[in-house]
Picture 1 (cartoon, one colour):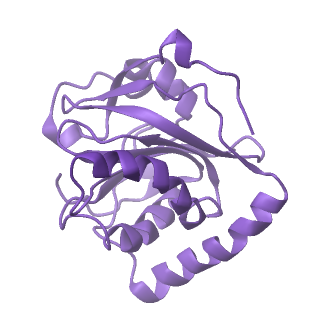
Picture 2 (tube, one colour):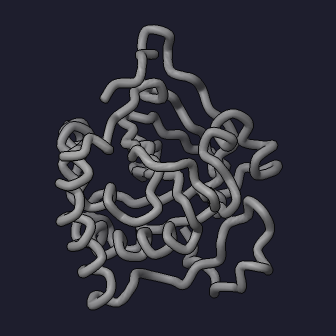
Length: 219
Protein backbone atom coordinates (compact mmCIF):
# COMPACT_ATOMS: atom_id res chain seq x y z
CA UNK A 1 0.00 0.00 0.00
CA UNK A 2 1.38 3.37 -0.97
CA UNK A 3 1.06 6.52 1.18
CA UNK A 4 -1.96 8.68 0.30
CA UNK A 5 -1.41 11.72 -1.86
CA UNK A 6 -1.36 15.37 -0.81
CA UNK A 7 -4.90 16.80 -0.45
CA UNK A 8 -6.51 18.77 -3.29
CA UNK A 9 -9.53 21.09 -3.23
CA UNK A 10 -12.86 19.30 -3.36
CA UNK A 11 -13.64 21.01 -6.68
CA UNK A 12 -10.64 19.27 -8.24
CA UNK A 13 -11.79 15.77 -7.34
CA UNK A 14 -13.37 13.60 -10.03
CA UNK A 15 -16.72 12.13 -9.07
CA UNK A 16 -16.28 8.68 -7.47
CA UNK A 17 -12.50 9.06 -7.58
CA UNK A 18 -10.52 8.54 -4.38
CA UNK A 19 -10.30 11.71 -2.32
CA UNK A 20 -6.61 12.72 -2.05
CA UNK A 21 -5.69 12.41 1.58
CA UNK A 22 -3.14 13.79 3.99
CA UNK A 23 -0.79 10.95 4.94
CA UNK A 24 -1.08 9.28 8.29
CA UNK A 25 -3.24 9.84 11.35
CA UNK A 26 -4.49 13.00 12.97
CA UNK A 27 -2.33 14.36 15.80
CA UNK A 28 -2.98 12.50 19.06
CA UNK A 29 -4.45 15.59 20.72
CA UNK A 30 -7.11 15.67 17.98
CA UNK A 31 -7.66 11.98 17.28
CA UNK A 32 -8.02 10.62 20.81
CA UNK A 33 -10.63 13.15 21.99
CA UNK A 34 -12.67 12.33 18.86
CA UNK A 35 -12.49 8.63 19.67
CA UNK A 36 -13.40 9.32 23.30
CA UNK A 37 -16.47 11.34 22.29
CA UNK A 38 -17.54 8.49 20.06
CA UNK A 39 -17.19 5.92 22.84
CA UNK A 40 -19.14 8.09 25.28
CA UNK A 41 -21.93 8.76 22.77
CA UNK A 42 -22.39 5.14 21.72
CA UNK A 43 -24.55 4.15 24.76
CA UNK A 44 -27.02 6.89 23.79
CA UNK A 45 -27.39 5.44 20.27
CA UNK A 46 -27.80 1.95 21.70
CA UNK A 47 -30.38 3.09 24.25
CA UNK A 48 -32.38 4.73 21.46
CA UNK A 49 -32.11 1.55 19.39
CA UNK A 50 -30.49 3.39 16.51
CA UNK A 51 -27.73 0.80 15.95
CA UNK A 52 -28.55 -2.49 14.31
CA UNK A 53 -26.98 -5.34 12.38
CA UNK A 54 -28.68 -6.26 9.10
CA UNK A 55 -27.76 -9.67 7.73
CA UNK A 56 -28.57 -9.55 4.02
CA UNK A 57 -24.94 -8.83 3.05
CA UNK A 58 -23.35 -11.31 5.48
CA UNK A 59 -21.55 -13.95 3.41
CA UNK A 60 -21.15 -11.70 0.36
CA UNK A 61 -17.69 -11.79 -1.23
CA UNK A 62 -16.23 -8.49 -2.43
CA UNK A 63 -13.39 -8.55 -4.98
CA UNK A 64 -10.76 -5.84 -5.35
CA UNK A 65 -8.56 -4.60 -8.18
CA UNK A 66 -5.39 -5.96 -6.57
CA UNK A 67 -6.71 -9.50 -7.11
CA UNK A 68 -7.77 -10.10 -3.49
CA UNK A 69 -11.21 -10.64 -2.03
CA UNK A 70 -12.88 -10.41 1.34
CA UNK A 71 -15.97 -12.00 2.86
CA UNK A 72 -18.50 -9.82 4.70
CA UNK A 73 -18.94 -11.27 8.17
CA UNK A 74 -20.94 -8.46 9.80
CA UNK A 75 -22.78 -5.25 8.99
CA UNK A 76 -23.40 -2.36 11.36
CA UNK A 77 -25.91 0.34 10.45
CA UNK A 78 -27.12 3.52 12.13
CA UNK A 79 -30.70 4.76 11.78
CA UNK A 80 -30.40 8.22 10.26
CA UNK A 81 -31.72 10.24 7.29
CA UNK A 82 -30.44 9.31 3.86
CA UNK A 83 -27.04 10.93 3.24
CA UNK A 84 -27.10 14.25 1.40
CA UNK A 85 -23.39 14.03 0.50
CA UNK A 86 -22.74 10.29 0.23
CA UNK A 87 -19.30 8.77 0.14
CA UNK A 88 -17.72 5.35 0.48
CA UNK A 89 -14.75 4.81 2.78
CA UNK A 90 -12.48 1.76 2.49
CA UNK A 91 -10.07 1.08 5.36
CA UNK A 92 -7.40 -1.63 5.37
CA UNK A 93 -5.02 -3.01 8.00
CA UNK A 94 -3.15 -6.18 8.88
CA UNK A 95 -3.34 -7.44 12.46
CA UNK A 96 -0.15 -7.91 14.42
CA UNK A 97 0.55 -11.20 16.22
CA UNK A 98 -2.73 -12.87 15.09
CA UNK A 99 -2.39 -16.26 13.40
CA UNK A 100 -4.55 -19.29 12.63
CA UNK A 101 -7.64 -19.59 14.81
CA UNK A 102 -6.89 -16.16 16.19
CA UNK A 103 -8.51 -14.71 13.07
CA UNK A 104 -11.73 -16.61 13.80
CA UNK A 105 -11.66 -15.30 17.35
CA UNK A 106 -11.13 -11.77 16.06
CA UNK A 107 -14.23 -11.97 13.86
CA UNK A 108 -16.32 -12.85 16.90
CA UNK A 109 -14.83 -10.41 19.40
CA UNK A 110 -14.53 -7.49 16.97
CA UNK A 111 -18.17 -6.57 17.61
CA UNK A 112 -16.82 -5.17 20.90
CA UNK A 113 -14.98 -2.54 18.84
CA UNK A 114 -18.28 -0.95 17.76
CA UNK A 115 -18.02 1.95 20.26
CA UNK A 116 -14.84 3.11 18.51
CA UNK A 117 -16.69 4.07 15.32
CA UNK A 118 -20.48 3.90 15.46
CA UNK A 119 -21.09 7.38 16.93
CA UNK A 120 -18.72 9.30 14.68
CA UNK A 121 -20.66 12.07 12.87
CA UNK A 122 -21.88 11.07 9.44
CA UNK A 123 -21.63 7.29 9.72
CA UNK A 124 -24.31 5.43 7.77
CA UNK A 125 -23.09 1.83 7.72
CA UNK A 126 -20.08 -0.46 7.87
CA UNK A 127 -19.43 -3.81 6.20
CA UNK A 128 -16.82 -5.81 8.12
CA UNK A 129 -14.65 -7.86 5.74
CA UNK A 130 -12.63 -10.89 6.82
CA UNK A 131 -8.93 -11.01 5.99
CA UNK A 132 -7.99 -11.50 2.34
CA UNK A 133 -5.31 -13.78 0.86
CA UNK A 134 -2.59 -11.52 2.28
CA UNK A 135 -4.05 -11.24 5.76
CA UNK A 136 -5.48 -7.75 5.16
CA UNK A 137 -8.76 -6.82 6.83
CA UNK A 138 -10.99 -4.18 5.30
CA UNK A 139 -13.92 -2.09 6.43
CA UNK A 140 -16.23 -0.77 3.72
CA UNK A 141 -18.27 2.15 5.03
CA UNK A 142 -20.93 4.51 3.76
CA UNK A 143 -20.62 8.04 5.09
CA UNK A 144 -22.52 11.30 4.81
CA UNK A 145 -19.74 13.70 3.85
CA UNK A 146 -16.27 12.79 2.56
CA UNK A 147 -14.52 15.14 4.99
CA UNK A 148 -16.26 13.48 7.93
CA UNK A 149 -15.14 10.12 6.57
CA UNK A 150 -11.58 11.42 6.30
CA UNK A 151 -11.63 12.71 9.89
CA UNK A 152 -12.92 9.38 11.15
CA UNK A 153 -10.35 7.32 9.24
CA UNK A 154 -7.45 9.46 10.43
CA UNK A 155 -8.73 9.25 14.03
CA UNK A 156 -9.27 5.49 13.75
CA UNK A 157 -5.67 5.19 12.58
CA UNK A 158 -4.54 5.86 16.17
CA UNK A 159 -6.64 2.94 17.43
CA UNK A 160 -5.59 0.56 14.65
CA UNK A 161 -1.92 1.38 15.16
CA UNK A 162 -2.10 -0.31 18.58
CA UNK A 163 -2.91 -3.71 17.03
CA UNK A 164 -1.75 -3.49 13.39
CA UNK A 165 1.51 -4.27 11.64
CA UNK A 166 3.51 -1.10 10.98
CA UNK A 167 2.88 0.27 7.51
CA UNK A 168 -0.26 -1.82 6.93
CA UNK A 169 -2.90 0.85 7.64
CA UNK A 170 -4.39 2.71 4.69
CA UNK A 171 -7.70 4.14 3.52
CA UNK A 172 -9.47 5.80 0.60
CA UNK A 173 -12.60 7.94 0.40
CA UNK A 174 -14.81 7.76 -2.72
CA UNK A 175 -16.85 10.95 -2.82
CA UNK A 176 -20.33 11.18 -4.34
CA UNK A 177 -20.97 7.43 -4.21
CA UNK A 178 -23.57 5.33 -2.40
CA UNK A 179 -22.48 1.96 -1.07
CA UNK A 180 -25.39 0.13 -2.68
CA UNK A 181 -24.49 1.64 -6.05
CA UNK A 182 -20.98 0.32 -5.65
CA UNK A 183 -22.09 -3.19 -4.72
CA UNK A 184 -24.74 -3.38 -7.44
CA UNK A 185 -22.44 -2.40 -10.32
CA UNK A 186 -18.85 -1.67 -9.25
CA UNK A 187 -17.44 -1.06 -12.73
CA UNK A 188 -20.20 1.38 -13.63
CA UNK A 189 -19.86 3.13 -10.27
CA UNK A 190 -16.09 3.73 -10.33
CA UNK A 191 -15.04 2.76 -13.86
CA UNK A 192 -12.83 -0.01 -15.21
CA UNK A 193 -10.16 -1.09 -12.76
CA UNK A 194 -7.33 -3.36 -13.99
CA UNK A 195 -5.66 -5.68 -11.51
CA UNK A 196 -3.22 -3.41 -9.75
CA UNK A 197 -1.68 -3.75 -6.26
CA UNK A 198 -2.03 0.01 -5.81
CA UNK A 199 -5.83 -0.30 -6.20
CA UNK A 200 -6.37 -2.44 -3.11
CA UNK A 201 -9.37 -0.22 -2.29
CA UNK A 202 -11.15 -0.46 -5.65
CA UNK A 203 -14.12 -2.85 -5.82
CA UNK A 204 -14.36 -4.71 -9.13
CA UNK A 205 -17.06 -7.26 -8.36
CA UNK A 206 -19.15 -8.97 -5.72
CA UNK A 207 -20.68 -12.39 -5.22
CA UNK A 208 -23.97 -12.46 -3.30
CA UNK A 209 -24.14 -14.61 -0.17
CA UNK A 210 -25.32 -18.21 -0.57
CA UNK A 211 -29.09 -18.58 -0.58
CA UNK A 212 -28.92 -20.36 2.76
CA UNK A 213 -27.09 -17.36 4.24
CA UNK A 214 -29.61 -14.74 3.14
CA UNK A 215 -31.71 -13.63 6.07
CA UNK A 216 -34.11 -10.83 6.72
CA UNK A 217 -32.65 -7.73 8.37
CA UNK A 218 -32.54 -8.01 12.14
CA UNK A 219 -32.18 -5.48 14.91
